[in-house]
Length: 599
Ligand code: ASP
Image 1 (cartoon, rainbow, N blue to C red):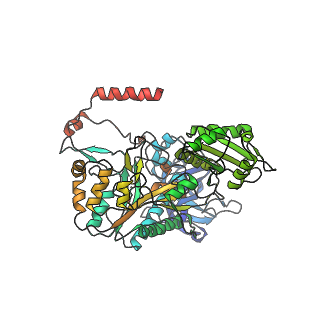
Image 2 (cartoon, rainbow, N blue to C red; image 1 turned 120 degrees about the vertical axis):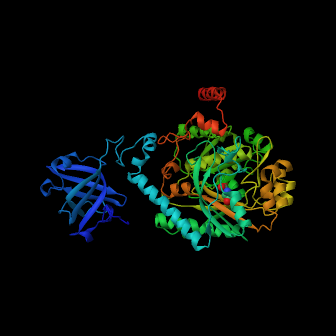
Image 3 (cartoon, rainbow, N blue to C red; image 1 turned 30 degrees about the vertical axis):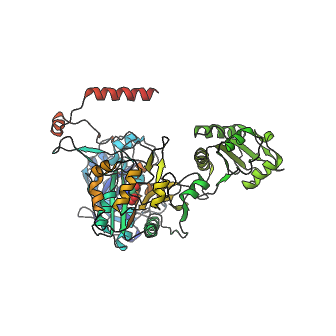
C-alpha cells in the first residue's frame, strides 16, 4: 500500500523479512488483551492485522493512556518488529510469525462503545449493520467484499482497455425510456411540472455514441429501476455496459467471454478451461424449464407424452387431450419417507401446479406411487426408461399447461439438484430469445427492450408471438448476469417495432422522435451488452445477497437506515419545485398499505 506520511508500512504487510526494522503503524484496536500489565493489541488497518506489544516498562505512553485504550480506538505506534517468542506464533494470521514492540503510542481518535462487536464470528442484525455500515466495513467480510468488487471492476476495465474500448460517461438525468421497469423520477426546478428520469441503463446514449462514430464504448454505469425488492435486486445497481459498431452477436459474446474469464481469474485465481455452454432460449426452456438454467447439475426435464399417449389414467389423459404436457424430472436418490414425498406435492401446488405425481423405482422394475395402480406395466417400463431411472430414483411428474409444467419442474430441479463442488462455475450463453413476451391479456411487451433487432422483420410483423430476436443473455449458476442484443439500426424498422407494441406513430414520435431521427443519419449496425457487476461478484464471493457486495445498499423497502433516505423535504424546496404533497393522497396510500398488509 502507498502508506502516506503517518505510517511506514501496512499492518498486514509485515513478515519475518521485517524483523529488526523500526516501523510506524496506524490503524484500529481490533482486539486487546491484558497480560499482567503488558497489553497485546491486534492492530488492524486496510491491509490486515498485526500483534502489537505495549509494555509499560518500555513506556510507550503514560499508564493512564495505556489503560484507557479501548476497542476501535484509532491509534498510531512506533516500534520495532521482532519474531514472536517460540510457541506463540499464530498460523491463522498472515503476520502471525511476528509482532511489533511499541516504543510510542499516540491515540489519534478515541471510539465510543460500539453498537455491535466487530467480530466476524458474531451474527449481527442486517438493519444494524446497514445503519452503521462504516463500522460493518471494518469487519473482514465486508472489507474483503469491497476489495473483490474493486478487483472485478479493474479486471473488466483492463479487458475493455485491451480490446480498444473508450470509456464514456452518459448522463444520469435523462428522458424516460421504455426498458421494462418503472422509472425513478427527479422533478425539475427550472421547468416546473417536468421530470427527469434516472437511467434504467445507458441504452439510448450508447446507441447515440455508435451513431456518433465511437465504435467501441464502455462504462461502469449506475442504473436505476423502481422495482420491488428481491434478494438480487436493488433500485440502484451497477453494470458494465458496452457497445460496438460493425458488430454482431458473435463479436459481443467473444468479448463477454474474455471479460467473464478475466474476472474469475482475478477474483478466484482459477482459469476456466471449458467453453461456455450455448443454448437457445427454446432449448433452455425445454430441457431446464428456465431461461437461466443452473448447469452445475443435469436433472433435465423429460417429456412423457409418448409414455402416456394411450393411458387409462384419466387425469393425465385429460391434460394431454387438452393440449397440455406431462413431463418429469428424475430427482435421483432422494430417500424420502411418505411424508417427504407428499411434501413434494404441496411444493408443486405452491409453485402453481394443480398437483404432482411422485414415483419411486423399486428393485424389480415396478414403482411405488399413489397412481401405480392406474398404470400398465408397459407404461411404467416406458416411464422408467425415458427418465433413465434406476432403483431408488424418485421421479416427480407434473401434468398441466406447458408453461406451468416448465415453471414447476424448473423450480423442483433447483430444489433437488446439487453441484458436485461448492465452487463450481457453470457459465452459459442463452441465445435466440423471443422478440416479445405475451401477457395474459395478449398484450405484447419486448422480451429484452424495444431497440432489439428481430431475427426477421416479416416474422415479427406476421407472427409476433413466436418471433425470434437477436437478444442473448449470460447466465452463471442459474443467475442471469446480464443481457444484450443486436440493435435495430433502421428508423423504419424501429418505428415498426413500436407499432407492433401498440405505441402509436404519434406517441412514438412524441417520446422518441429524437431517437428515430438520429437513426436516419447513417447509423452503423451495432450490438452490445450489460453485465450486472453486483450479481457477478456476489456469486464469485459466494454471498447470498447483492447487498453484501454493495458498499451502501438499501433495505428491502428501499430505505437507507444510515442516512435516512428517502426522506421528507422542506416545504420551501417543494414550492421551488412547484410540487404540493396532498395529504389526501398520502392518506389514501397509507390506507392501501394497511389493507395490503392485513390481506
Ligand atoms: N441496456 C440493457 C440492459 O440494461 C443491456 C443491453 O441491451 O445492452 O439490460
